[in-house]
Length: 278
Image 1: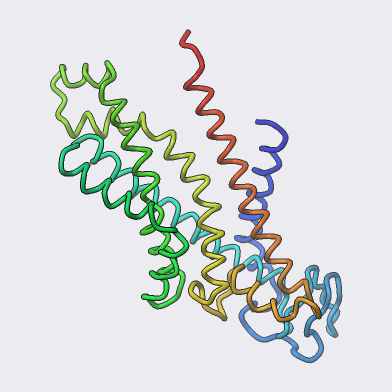
Image 2: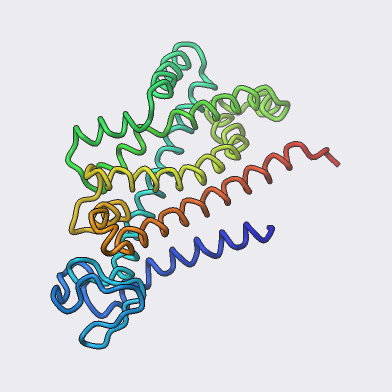
């Protein structure tokens, strides 16, 4: 692991730990209104009338921005992880069945995947989000429903190649049934690209969730997410820019760390595949 990867891992672990522990240590409920008069739009490192320090400042309702960002991190990270893992699991299942059974199953599943890949994902997200009640659960469902197609294509290609390898033929010769060969021997060998796609997909899902929440189609206030916090501060960008910039920077940092780790995992898997056998 090189220096960049260590930094990304440390930052991502720190953000996750702060999201879990930070809100518990907060002196006030981040969802309740604060001192609207005395603590409204305090700049970073300012103290309110009670002497409490606000490292990142406060919003228009006197609420501490750092605490709200950490509460939002819980939701954004959870939505991103569940959405990306769910999409990867659904895509792996579809790709494995398509590559193993072939025939009409392959044609139907890959036809649906091709149609989904041909449409811009952002458009699909907006349409699906507009059809359902906005919220965290609907955002996860939308991310899964629009994110499985690329993984399905990857897994199908891997399964088609792995199914012809000697160990799969040997398992069949020893009497293993088709389902056992598929799930016990073939699919585990195809999980490398799925892990890479999932790691990269987490950052992408967090970014898409932030975009939906920014547009009012994702997590709804008063529950904070990075997207709706940015949206809530956009009209204050000239008066109190930290209200929108702080959650935006944390969003960019998290997505960048996920991208770095995904690229590193892909490079390692590619190196293992290309390395000559001893």
